[in-house]
Amino acid sequence: MKLKTYQARSIADALEQVKKDLGRDAVILHTRTYKVGGWLGFGGRNMFEVTASSGMHVVQPSRLRARAAERESTPDPAAVAARLLRQAYGQTGPASAAASGAVAAENASARDARREVVRITAGATAASVMAARPIPAERPAPGLTVAGQAAMAQELAAIKSMVARVLSGAGGGRLGAGCAVAGDALTQQYLRMLESEVAADIADEVVGRAREELTRAQLSDEKAVQKAVLRALSGHIPVAPEAGEPAPERGADGRPFTVALIGPTGVGKTTTVAKLAATYKLRHGRKVGLVTADTYRIAAVEQLRVYANIIGLPMHVAMTPAEMAGACAALADRDVILIDTAGRSHNDDSKLEELRAYLEAAKPHRTHLVLSSAASEASMVRSAERFAVAKPDRVIFTKLDEAVSFGVLVNVARRIGARLSYLTTGQEVPDRIEAGKSERLARMVMEGAVLK
Image (cartoon, rainbow, N blue to C red; front, side, top):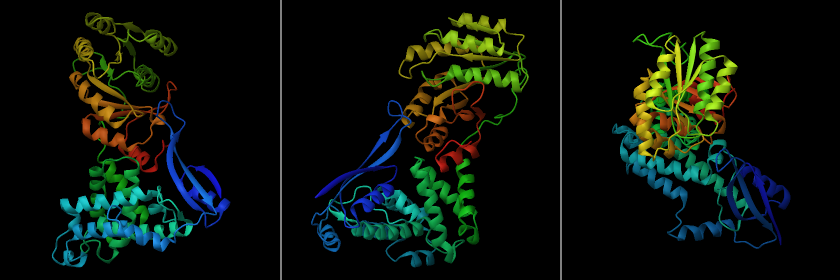
């Protein structure tokens, strides 16, 4: 018996290696996924590992499926999908549901059924559903041959068709006879959003809005569906109205336009302050002054001072709230004042209160909460909740070049309520910063990469 292990970036590539090396009768013994690269669990990429052998006697696929069907603990996916679809459409089927005017996809039980079908499909292998390739599940049963995997792929294709009908509604209306084709395109977009970790409720709303917006002919056009989904997804990303506009020369109260950056430690506040300073001076022609209250982090003051010297800007250090007020007064002849604050743990109440005291002394016109795209969704939401004491009205997502997925940014932007102002995609100063645009972030979510 020949036992070998294969690694690849996708399960399909790994199985192709198995087939090429061991032949079509190779037996898959084990599969797993793991991450490579990155730092401390962030920024890595998924890899797939398949252990296979040749020369082992296995049960015929038909007999294997028959035994599996007998075990109640492992129901057949197609049977489960059929049951869920009956729940979504009603016991009389899609045609009767349409005839009665009940659109199953709009009620709660239908949405639950749809999510469960998509979970089964995506859990087996999202790649095989979207690409319609003969790819097995990520965790095939021990002893399943290549021929058995092909049979499983056919079952997944059937489930894909069921999901398409669910996502298309109960038939009739705009979709009519074209609902299956439209559902197929929407299914692909839906699964792509889930793969990018967009929240299921947001993905549901996006697909529903796209379906309502398009005509029957447009629903059969994959590009038209993609554009509609992008438009709908963009609508879930609140953007600051002034994003991309030059900074005001003065605030409404006559003071220099004052901007403060707050956020957890290590999210890139100081680098972002330097980028904004260069943008305001070099691109917008504003007179800029810098104030830093980050006296806790080693060499933080010197880091910003180096940037200030390179750009040619005055800089003040504030070690107390009173010194913060004095530093802002000393820069009264400037058009714009940028304030860098010390990173605070969202679990340290006393430090957060101290931060609020600094901001009350500075009286910023805008306060940007800076969050790292490399952090988890839970961590970003928790930070936003705790930093709410500082009343931020804008959010900056940094380190998009280190993000594992972009869908979580849509979830966070919607949950915290602050409007997106800027995105950063690297550490280079003064580059790698751009105004936040909902359409661009939506494209990153759907394409899974930072766009050039």
